Length: 546
Image (cartoon, rainbow, N blue to C red; front, side, top):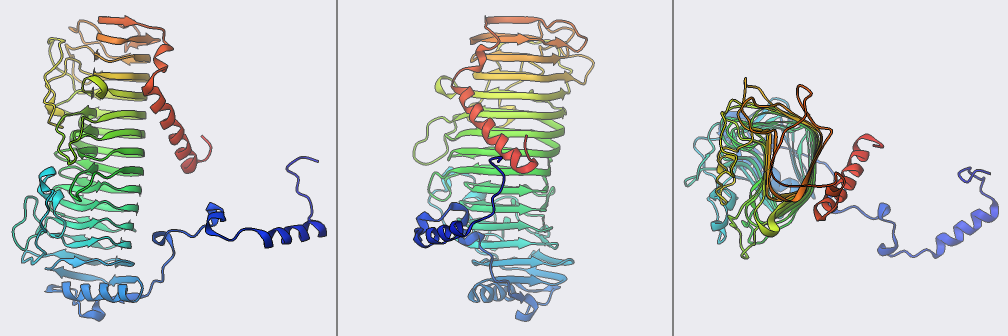
């Protein structure tokens, strides 16, 4: 009989099974993990409905409905949980709403919760740690909606929460608010269901110290204000089908010291989303980077516009960032398609050291740059703070180009500044690698849109090993070489690579060649290997067997 062929149970077998069931341990520790009780934040809750109009809300756009909404929230919480429902109408909110555990705000189609120009929002609370981050990150009470240490809360649509152009993009004065949602130390947050956050002031949504966050079909429009969604010191996050259009950063992952501790971040998935950022970064790590970040999966993302980085990652305040994976991402009109930088700002409590970036992969990435252009860059600090273990597979970039010939010496760098402009004009129109170890490019290319560019396509300065396999570059008519290697102590390898007309690549600079398999060894590759296993498991969960 085939080992997987089922047998009919016999009477003896049934008796033995019953006997075994009687003697099985019954403690929680012996319960299989799949059968253990779910955390409270994942348990189904009773969903009685609390209509805000039953608590005195008018929904006429002129009456202040804040107190009525707070009453409905308190009633839902006192009942053990429920849904606070906003039927169609415009609900003016002059006061801060105070969220409570086990409560979901549901805004029906045609319902808008709107900020007021005559705000009486809660004053920003004192924070003894506000020296370590910007004012907006340090104070949480001054928001349209605030909550701390809550469990099992939600905000669902298809209605709108709109600051109405009345929230502040700078530091608020008494009675003013600078964010729509301000949530700290929450466990179990749902944000989506078609809901829209609009005109959020400094932040449409800021969460800090939270865990178990789920967002599906969320729209944020802060293109006339500042940030979209700041996810700070938060773990176990899944974001799907988000559309975020921001003026400042669209979707950004940070870790600051606002809660008086250096907190961890990670186990995050973002897929099938659309992002844009007028002035700044579309999908970003930092600049606040106190606690470590690990296990991030980004897939199926479209970025349309970013005046700084499309995919940005900086460690400025001592964080180790590792096991981060980007896949199936398209970018247009980005000034800096990809930037990784380690800096020395160290703006965090507990006297941090310089941080580290390692184990990052990019697969199937396409980007078109815009002027002013910042060449895609990996910039590590010296010593143990090199960027380590980064792989690029099927990464195809088109940058503006148009620069003349220039010195191929290392550009200047402001180590305490996180912006792409903190490094002066790179001497390569394509990739500039500085103090980066175990970097590989496979089946990738870089081109320029202008008639010419006088710089090489790639320069690697310090670090190594670095390897290029089936790498295609456009040759600048006045460039001294195509790929330059400057003091790359770990060696370099170029194989099966060519320019866009099929010619051989010109190699320049100093350094040593190596066997084209040798670059696969070293500490950085261990991070990449571990990360690849996580990524494969993640893709298997999303798509079936890889």
